[in-house]
Length: 531
Image 1 (cartoon, rainbow, N blue to C red):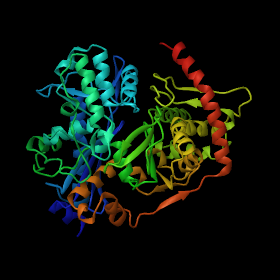
Image 2: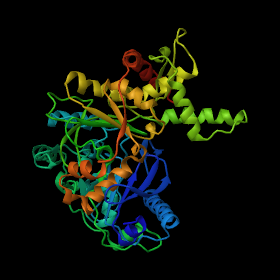
Image 3: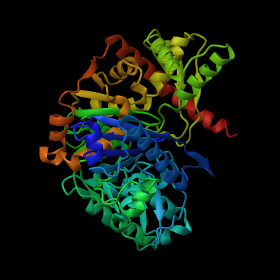
Image 4: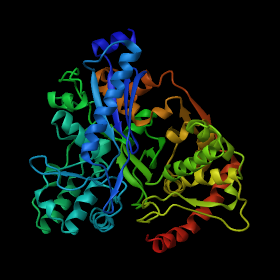
């Protein structure tokens, strides 16, 4: 069936993902082929010491993104969509959106980027004997208790961004298990929040004078393929400003960007893994067995189907790298040289391949915010070198690319070296892989494992949530999620594989010695630079 006819008959799946800097919509057929795209650019704000987005901007961004998609469909196919086979919503994981019983927002939306929950995370980690990272929703909720914030007594619902938007579109207070795993520890056998830990959390809240139960306040956990409700008339009006879109469209469970990244790279079975590279950078490895002990550097989460998965998550990814590229773009303008941003990224990234394997002794930290893996709660982007360092453009670009993987590598070293986790292949996706080969080569050196990047890598999580919607609409007849991905979506998709270069591996290890030693410089910068 032609794409136009599929769209007219609603035999398509729509995925919308709220990323850190862009809201993206992807329309696919049931085999995952991309039919149309939509975009909306946005950015978080740092208000009163909190990284946040205004929820009014979330609504406006959703409408703008869908409008962009609708216009592309009309331009390409000459039709206006009125329905879809299914819709899915995804977003950056973690954080804290608190509503009262009347769905009124009680406190500013705190994103994953906030690291103001150290005390709560420490208490919960000790209580559960399970690592609770600073950005998890449970840590945010309990930190509000510890801080004595008045609004806590009125909290009726706590959402991630994906679950919140799904609630607005469907009226259903549910969440995909992968996203839920960024709120509270998950029992992969029960496919739900861990009951014993939930009871302990409730007792802790009661001791502080609060009656809310975590399993009532947090959304209900669902897995891939579960019915997560229908688009309401109010939801359709919120999504489509023209009023053309009809209500009643099935929606898949809302997922976090980790789960959609796994789906988009077919990394949902044991011994598979992926690295998502954007504003934050995180690596996921699906486990064959549980880890031998608790590691504060490692998050234990799940695939969209509920398989246990270990995550090495770095808050700081490409933000500082992008800022440097903008400086070079400004310089080009000053010199009267016309150079598009895409071309500039490509030339600078490829030039990094000419640098020394250890970056010539240069050191950089792109810490715009705190970094949980290195236990640093604030950020100061910095660049440093010694008088003996080889300071040139190739090494400068190489060190800024290396350092974007620095914190993630520390977590991956725990998994691959200390825990002996087996990894057959690491799949790369996200904006860092738009320039072919370069970051793939550096990532292979960082983890000393083969790295594959597919042609769909730049589509990222928006494509992943579209696939999860397609799985609900039509893919379940193929079998489990991994069956659907293997047999229908990735059957003919092949990736370019890069093997680790021994010299690059050696050079990256030398860089990491500088990186670890240089953390003291980062801490000193935080203390000294208070303006």
